[in-house]
Amino acid sequence: MFQLSKKVEYGLIVLRHMAMKPRGQVFTAKELANEYEIPYELLAKVLQKLAKSGIVVSMQGVKGGYALGQKPEAIIVSDIIRVIEKERPMLAGCYVDGPLSCSIFDICTIRKPLEKIQKNINSLFDKMTIQEIV
Image 1 (cartoon, rainbow, N blue to C red):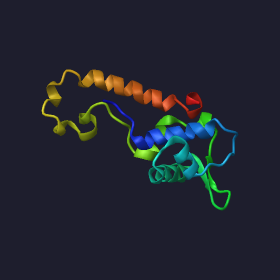
Image 2: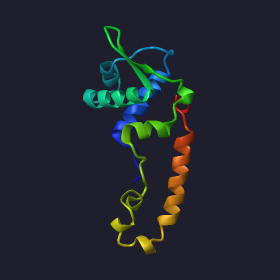
Image 3: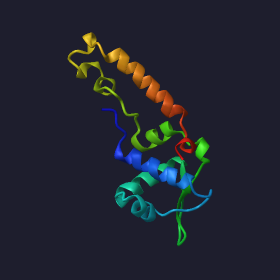
């Protein structure tokens, strides 16, 4: 089954949360983790990756934390996935592992239809912004 990783889900949750608040508002990893019952350590790693890419900005100090680094309408879902996971989720293992990983790759009757579905999913993620999920 096609599925986003928990890390990507958590990233989308906190980015949506930030996008729903006034621009520039700062959030700590701890308060976001508590608000959504997300494991703090995992969320902190996700936020660090997002900060490294500029999707969010990290601020040090007593009033430090994280804030959106870009406008919500400029943050593309596929970019979030790539930053957090490096690769897009795939429908079929043969697209990830290659044809040698599948004993029926050459005669598979669903490979082409799944490829079409995968392209549509990728296209959707390439166009969808955080603003659209607010």
